[in-house]
Image (tube, rainbow over all chains, first blue to last red):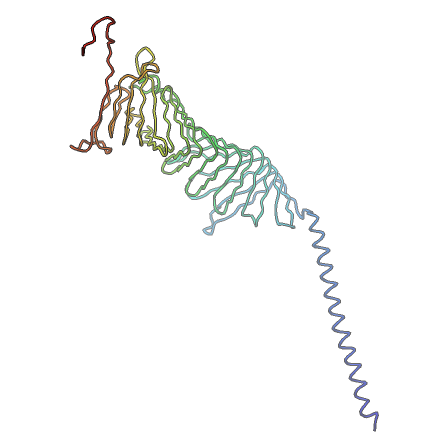
Length: 200
Length: 167
């Protein structure tokens, strides 16, 4: 009779071992999966671009289906590691509300932070046509950060701003295109041209 | 004032400038220096707006220092007009400078000050070189609200050798 009591212990321990083997096995598999994931991640860490687009145009729509702003350029290189894109010869055209369209050009640009920030570098130029209640505007600087979603832009570089026939300079600028307010910092000068020969 | 001034370009030097493009208001702050031809104005803050027909209206306010202006006067010779006040308004169309509270205007021959006027409010028409003084800093005349003074320098000097008048 004795082995009666022992028999079930044998079957029990085999079951136990199998269970343990299953547990450790799956744990080991998960580990394997993660490591593989990391390797892929590591691959991305090397900052490899995952796609490159030539002569592209990226249009962002507002909720009402109107185009809100268009980013185009000669070449866009997207890097998944931080979901950023580098653009050569970018053109950012913002079409906010009833103001005339404003074009921003530069040599290079980087779009990051989930496409909410565009940092333009080298020979940045902004041109906006005149409209019924505002004068023609041109701006030249060396670097500019644009937040298209919030329709504002800023720079800490020297800036030359022309509106109508007046020219203003400064070092550092914050501009809100929605309310069309511009703050120029740093010592600067504003030059109004001589008034035409008005008959006195 | 110098006739040619009104056809010169206006240069405004500032530490910072805020432009409101919709309302066409330009706010200059930080040691603002406005120059146009011989006209020179200094202030801590200046707000420039545009009249519908495109003329500038500038309001300059002084902080620690008073607002000051200096302009060459018409006519030959080295004649200048200088003024200072706590607040100044400059109307480009009428070429009118209004000086508010503790205002002072001086006429200078070269460096030598000649006539001087002091009052709570002075309006100076730089085109006709006509200025009027009021005794309240709102620009109207209220009896008993303070006095203005004017110092007129003698034009003729006392001939030497003549006995002094008040002997």
